Amino acid sequence: MPNKRCTRCKKWKASTKITPKTHAWCYSLLHSEGLSFSVDENCYLCNKCWMHSINQKQHREIKVKKENTNDVEDMDTGIDEEEDSLTIENIIFADSGHKKCIVCRSDVHGGLIVMPKPARLDLLVLKRMYAPHGVRSCTEHLWNSRLLPDTEVNIDNRQTPISKLEPSVLLQLINDLLGLLQEASSTTRLDFMDPCLTDEDYLAWTGWNKQQFEDMFTLISPDIRTSFNRDAKNTLAMFWIKLKTNLSFRQIGSLFNIPGDGEHRRKVAARSFDSVRQVL
Ligand SMILES: [Zn+2]
Ligand SMILES: [Zn+2]
Image 1 (cartoon, rainbow, N blue to C red):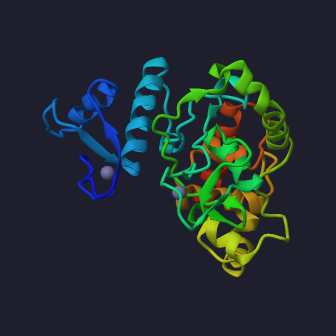
Image 2 (cartoon, rainbow, N blue to C red):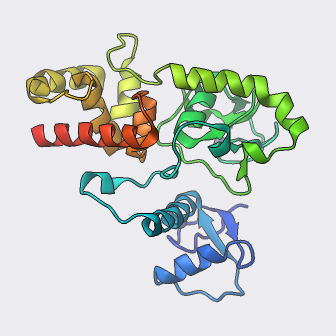
């Protein structure tokens, strides 16, 4: 869908078509933001505004559920706020066939490759999406076989929970899925104590190169409280990842494989962020 104008931000980057029939909630959300357009007219959204709308929708639903907020934790706009551990019930099955990019859904072109396993794991841990072995992705969403942290996934039409798949389909996938799940829950996706992390890794995640990060760390490490079992370097990394990416505290907690359920991970990551903020 080339050159459609996003109804919300007016940029010519819209890729998702919204119809009053299928997306009534989205229409009312856009109206509540003060956008005026006629209900009969089709509405298009860019990826950013589409993700924003989904976040808003989920936030509203959560707000109705519980009304407790607090400064730092309020910064969160992750899409998986109400989901806890990685289980079959809360994973979305993402398959675009072999002709489209799993991330942005653009059609086959030269830069499309088979998505490497580390990136599929990132998709699972960060986006709660299972991409089966063999799906394709543009190279620009990846770096060093990993999913770039700022990547936004175009999730239009792909909201099938794994648990709702046909049994025959599920059976074909189950070995691959179980293998990924086990790996996701037993290994840390990111560890800044790991000497193998390169300059580019540091830049992609924190916005600083390794030397800059180390210098900053030397300066502030004596003052960082590490009372929640995170070593100070990872605490500092969490702070910059939160600022640089659009990941939620819960997603960051999953990335560092903080033990406990999703709520606990979110709290630990939020406290880590706060402890660095106070030092800086
Ligand atoms: Zn937009
Ligand atoms: Zn793509």
